[in-house]
Image (cartoon, rainbow, N blue to C red; front, side, top):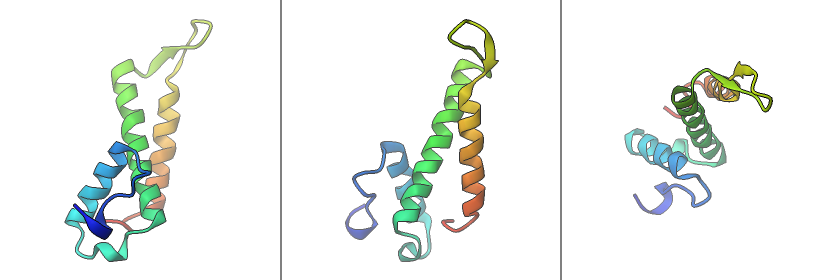
Length: 92
């Protein structure tokens, strides 16, 4: 992918992959490309990372004193999922 449809260099690698995948499949990329689309792609990347951490480390982890707590990444994933729902189908 090159030119105006290339992911911006400031995006994380995962967000850049999300960007490229959506742009490749979108019928009108010009309608979605912009700063908000970049933020959306980073949000997808954040949700994926948080979800992977929970899968790898479990839903219950130990706090700094060794007490069991819900994995903090659960809250991160939930917030990212809510943010993605708020965008709805804008970039699909």
